[in-house]
Image 1 (cartoon, chains in turn purple, green):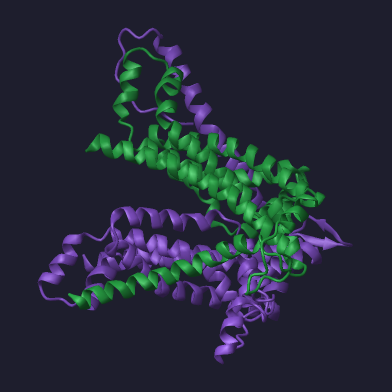
Image 2 (cartoon, rainbow over the protein chains, first blue to last red):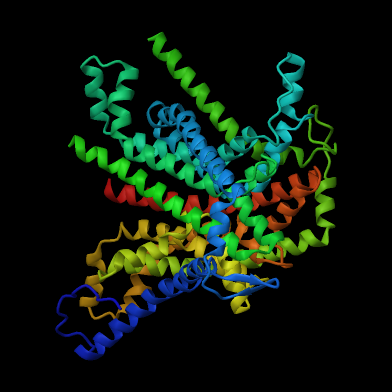
Length: 302
Length: 268
């Protein structure tokens, strides 16, 4: 399946030409085939199966292979799906915007205002949450915002509370930020650190103020990385189940909650599959649009 | 000058605030896991290990932990092998459809886990894998292979392709070159990949939740406990889970740090 790079003629090699070629081919297949086979069997096929299942039907509580559009018609016309779709999209976009804005000063500080050793340590710190149980972090956040929680015990005596965050869209967004903010700060820091210092110094030397330098030099130069960071935040929030369930109180439900409900209790897998396929299509469109946005404008300028 | 100092101070304070938001949930989990009070609030109710005793006496949690360790242990070996293979193929070969090959290997983390979970559940139901630990492992390998691939590929980027060719010229077979040159050179990245993929699997809850059935892993157990009432036992589990994952990630980082340090010294 794959062609090795041309290797220099080996003259006195102990292996003869043809057997050497056979060894080479076996070698290439041994390393090349397993990842492709595994991901095809357990990633591509299940996703294909998911798409096929959207055309199946449920008869007498049993899944039956079929070629019906009924599931699509039902979901796309259902008010609860449309509401959940708009709600999920809006909250994810809002999260991407808030995370991008909130992360920027921190990324700016890490990229320009601290020593390389401190930066490396902070980057390591930002990787840690990515690998620590997200449901447990959401549980902690839930405790923070609960009526007798830490935040309200501090705010209420000051006359600033009580805050009602749990079981509201605000709670969902707070949870999305717990999920996405570390990654956005991380990606923005990389993006800003890669802006050529000489551009920034040139701007300063030419008398460009700090804010203007950020706005006209740093942000345009780091544009691709900043857009990628925001897009990742959107993608993560759009697919998240935990924050809208435990901080948002499932009301109104997001798309991932619809899927989980249909599969876990409703047992209507074809309908859940339609929702899932709609989510994948949406994410692909969003990613393509954002990539076009990131690279397209740049070409225009060049 | 003092303006600049003030600006720097404000930026540092803001950054500290962002880090506080990110780390408050992690720190409070650990702190309140040792709290004697039932409800985690201020003031602190005194030191206690009762929640740890409670979870170690709970058979469902023990089983969950065992399942998680088995799944993570098997997943990390398979995912690291597959990730290494894919990275090596990317490093060594050029062929038609290579970008599709690489996309197939690298894409799974961009698909929401809730969707991977449903897709694997419907598929595994057909082939008799659903409800088994093997079924969870299969999904975790799909999800974590790209991480292993990225780590090994980064390492291979520092290996001069001429070294491999020199070995062939001297008559070494591709297998001898692989195990005499490539694998030893990649050892730190391979170990880092083992730790990181184990951490990904150990913390994954969505695929496991859909696929596991009665064979719950620890994060799935936590998810079930979240549906109940406030319980400091979740903090105790959380603290242990954090401890395991952070250890794995730190080990991976140390290996990578040594790797990049050596590369920097070589260049410098």
